[in-house]
Amino acid sequence: MGKRIVIDPVTRIEGHAKISIFLDDAGHVTDAEFHVVEFRGFEKFCEGRPYGEMPSITARICGICPVSHLLASARAGDAIMAVAIPPAADKLRRLMNLGQIVQSHALSFFHLSAPDFILGWNAPQATRNVFGLIAADPTLARAGIRLRQFGQEIIEALGGRKIHPAWAVPGGVRSGITDQGRARIRERLPEAFATAESALRLFWKALDENREEALIFGNFSSLFMGMVTADGTWEHHGGNLRFVDSAGSVVADQIDPARYRDYIAESVQEASYLKTPYFKSLGLPNGIYRVGPLARLNICERMGVPRADAEYRAFRQMSRGSVTSSFLYHHARLIEILAALEYIERAIEDPELSTKHLRADAGVNALRGVGASEAPRGTLFHDYTVDPSGLLKSVNLIVATGHNNLAMNRTVAQIARHYVQGDDIPEAVLNRIEHGIRCYDPCLSCSTHAAGMMPMKVTLVGPGGRILREVTRG
Image 1 (cartoon, rainbow, N blue to C red):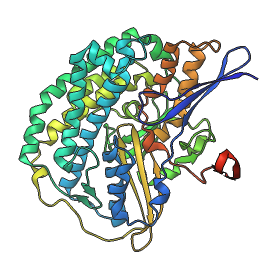
Image 2: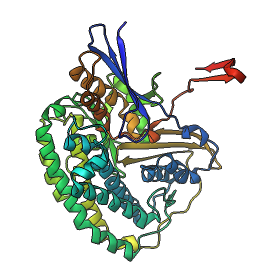
Image 3: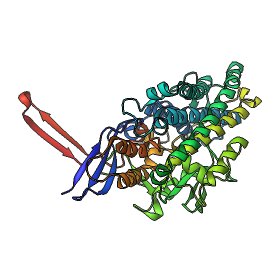
Image 4: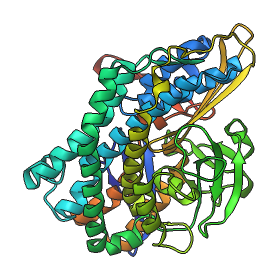
């Protein structure tokens, strides 16, 4: 009959999940599944709300990614209004997204993932975390904490608060940046650059010491998707979609994000609340693709800023085609932090950020609007259909963790097949399997949105524990 081993919960990720490992009678791994066990439901309960409320509502999907939802939602509102927002508003939105990339990537690298390859896979479970990192290397841990704080301060300087800023709106933004905000960012940039470059040196050393992990952790052929500029430069807010394959060949290019349904289909799994998008023309399971830092560096041709471009060239030299190891999401994340800092350094000197014209005013001019932005974890879609009065008739969200669902399942199965022999699994092996998920930095609060009707079982229990009635749906 075989056996099933469950890792529950998966630790050091944002949200709640578990992993099932399936063994045959001989103790060999036949498969593994990643289960997302929490459900939200924003797509359904937002129906009937005015589209103008959606940025502030959907920002509450997550306390880690509120900026990502805020900006994608505002862009969907721009499309419904059919307006081009003022140039200063676009630049300010981009600046906030850069701050979001810095703070989120710093959290992922220093707090959630680095304890594994700095403290070691065999480090005691009780100390293999950020507190253990603080004890082992307080300078590094402090630098990581302050780098994340710097990204949050940019968000606060623009939106008035670090988490859930009510700032981006359909048509633009509510406020600009003050001279004091600019000065504070300038003051903190040298330290942020030093931390990013130090982390890159640290990861090169960790990569040399973890070559087996780099070969095993999610190293397989797939498509990669993200947004690029018209000339193929790295993009984080705006641009069009590009798909490349593992050989590095462009499969589809310069796709208007509003046409995502022409290329991406969605399905559901019985064992998870997480939707499973796939590349439409290849179907399931062949339509697997990845998004996020690794994908963005695989699809672009340059970062567009000098320090990050130098790191990007070294990164791309690791493979003749696309870089396919998911362990290298960590490397890509650090390169994106460096790029974000360089773009922030440029942006704060732009005098247009002080312009007072920050919002276009219009009503409902289109009954459907799609907003897309590159969240730290990958491409985020907000797709709204409204009635003529601007009330939402339907909402569809595809978030980065959803895009990566097939890849995460394949990653944990690949790691388990390599390390697991029989049902006696050492803690270090369990941690390696969990780390396969950490590579993607999943945000499960963002990701749990169902397609179709959610299965549900309701049990009515009376006094004494007697079951009075059971109702099952789906």
